[in-house]
Image (cartoon, rainbow, N blue to C red; front, side, top):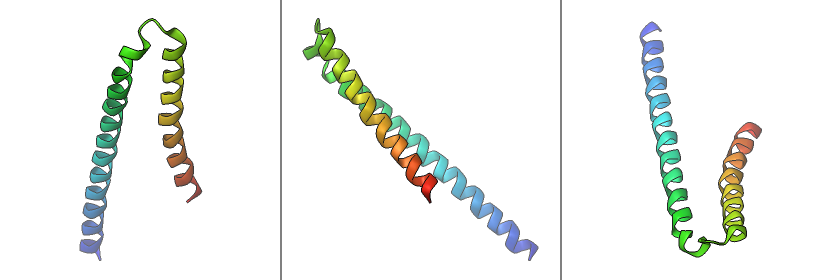
Length: 77
């Protein structure tokens, strides 16, 4: 029984670190993808403050919205 528990803990630890690695990788990709999208619009928004603010609000709502949706759905489970 003790050997089975030790193996279970090793498996859970490996699962934890793998999950943490995947989450960090996802956040890294999302962050740089967001920066790429923002800087790709920089040519259109030079000198246009209202357009710049509208892009920033739109991207903020989109990126934060799906993150909050994932957290909400995970909480419901």
